[in-house]
Image (cartoon, rainbow, N blue to C red):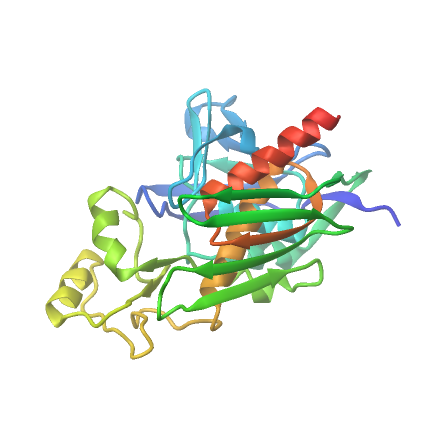
Length: 306
């Protein structure tokens, strides 16, 4: 049976705000012809303002992935890209009227629910794969992050997170082509440590962060005064630290939800290779920077081999 490319069956509209910019944004996912890949159209910048979702254009990776080409910018696209990858959407146009993809609930679930309701449309062209022919290992000595890719018949990924946190501990999560992405990975939300929030606010990040779209890890006991101050930053009446070390704004979907979210990020960043990779991925303490560095290495290898 031939493995064909697929696109969306319908159009799907999302309205929200960017996690880091706090700016309002409307985004519409649309079907696209074979071999289009995933392309973003900044409709606020004119009819020709397109940028391909490729790692070639990654310019920034601090707490999200950003693409930039000819003054066209797209930021925080990783959750959407992971959804396209895992559900099997090869071709789509994403119309968006600002530079940051809406954070919604901090996970990929809103996209999955919309797309899965209709299923996908099979197209008359074979899907493209790249078979890795040698092991690639990449380590960031400064952060201790590492990613190793080994040749395999299909794609799989295993992620380990270790923030030296007594609340999180060391967590792992894995993905294969048998994983039920919609139920096991898509609902997993972005997370942040309580002690980082002040710094992020001061540095103009997470302006669109709220207590609906993030898991907040509180490593140590926090004074009532500090909790009150944070509550006012988030415009809520009251927040509390649960005994297990999380703010009481959300309930965890899984014990290892944070590791599963990092896995979501790996899928999203690796999809920027622009082709489906057959390899086993082992990522330790990964983040957008190392994910996209490795994706670039593979993409350069692909282009060179062709």
